Length: 153
Image (cartoon, rainbow, N blue to C red):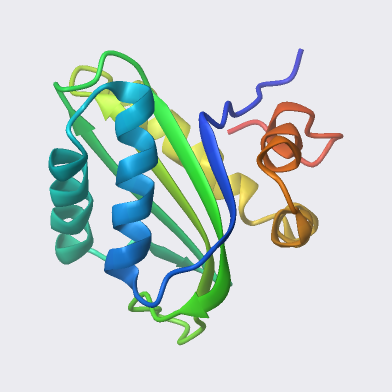
């Protein structure tokens, strides 16, 4: 069975005017699933973003961090209704944003998850399908049923 990426929450066509609004909305979604404080998650996302931009190119950003406040891995995904500036090295606005939050003691597993997520977003067909998705279920199913696009990391 191929490795799939479980998306815990997906938000299609998120309306946000800037990076902070995107991170706040994703922190709010993550707080419902993880039981962590939205403010803690938002602060950690912003802290990580200040250290280094989560933008990985081609309109995609993958924010990530580890924290003892969660007991399991969390992956959140959003497509943006309108692309926004995300400190992009390629000067392309971002319209696909993913967050990965792992327990503090998941060092290697966190890196493996980050690698697989980053690799998935290098697939143009997947990105096109995500950008076209109209609902959470479709977005999640693209990762759960990869149809051959996912390469082992």
